[in-house]
Each structure stands twice: as C-alpha cells, then as structure tokens.
Length: 74
Image (cartoon, rainbow, N blue to C red; front, side, top):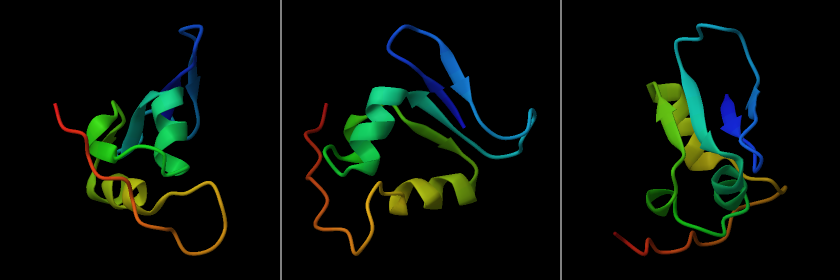
C-alpha cells in the first residue's frame, strides 16, 4: 500500500516489489473506507485482482456496510 499524505509525504506498507498494490491520496483512501465517497470518484487505484477486490470491501468500522454512496461521475 502506498498513500500520499497531506504534506506530500508518501506512506508505504508491505514488501517492496509486491505484485499487487493499492495507491492514492490518503484522504481519498479515508473517504473510501469510511464509505463517504464512491470509489469511482476517488483517486485510489488497485493493481491486481486481490487488491481490487479488497478495495470493494475495505471499511474502517465493524459490522455490515450500509449502502455505498452513488458515484457523482466526471
């Protein structure tokens, strides 16, 4: 995982050279996992099928997710 913090500093977790990854601005990632914005409206990307699937279910709270927000579109 590679997230860019508000100051521009890059935060990384996981092994270098991982075959799958998640990247993007930390703020967008937070909006995604708290279900505040639709994934299509954020600059968070997944490389690889497992990373992509994980972004679809990741959440920052316990329990069943509510309805996801509708995408605003471009």
